[in-house]
Amino acid sequence: MSGNGGPTGEETGPIVRVWHGWTEPEDADAYEQFLTDPEDGLLETLDGDGYLGYDLLRREAGREVEFVTQLRFADYDAVTEFAGEDYGRAHVPEEARELLSRWEDEAEHYEQRSSDRR
Image (tube, rainbow, N blue to C red; front, side, top):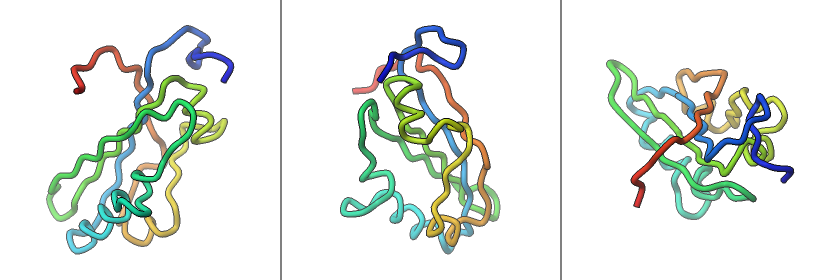
């Protein structure tokens, strides 16, 4: 990697990529399994230089179930390595599209300013 400069070139700390997707209640458990299965779950099997891990959030949201993924990266170079040059676009695999009722087309990126993660 060439450094950890952000979109404007300034040095940044860890970057958190945040994305939202929604399922019908009957598809929620299958979608969660698709993401977190220890053998082949999409989130569970991610790796690469600068990838620091994930958090998966889930909540009942009216007639849907909302999922929020938070992927942690060392810097924007690692985000670009994961998502490509157009790293703001969401990457939703076909299998996920079959389980989701809707999703955000864009992912948001935040600089992690502090954490008491243990």
